[in-house]
Image 1 (cartoon, rainbow, N blue to C red):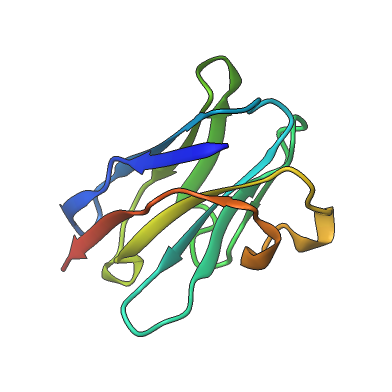
Image 2: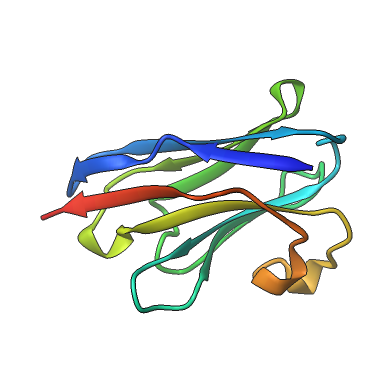
Length: 125
């Protein structure tokens, strides 16, 4: 699976942004997908995940209620709708795919086998 994330940018606090992640090279159907982010000087952290074909979603507490992860299997594209953005959301955002993940590991970066190149999101105050 090859992943390419895009849609980042510089926005003001309180506004919205939608990230996309295009998957190619292998079947996207039934693969658990996730979004992670990494701010300067910090470790990569889990943002959101969507489990296989179930539609079950998972969020970090810091983004719950503001971010929504979704997927369009027909377009092999993963999305992250980010609302009410805060300066603390500033980071490079990565999409990832985990064909063999178990449910308890959905928030663990090392459980994901494929990664996109990242897209920068900068939120100004």
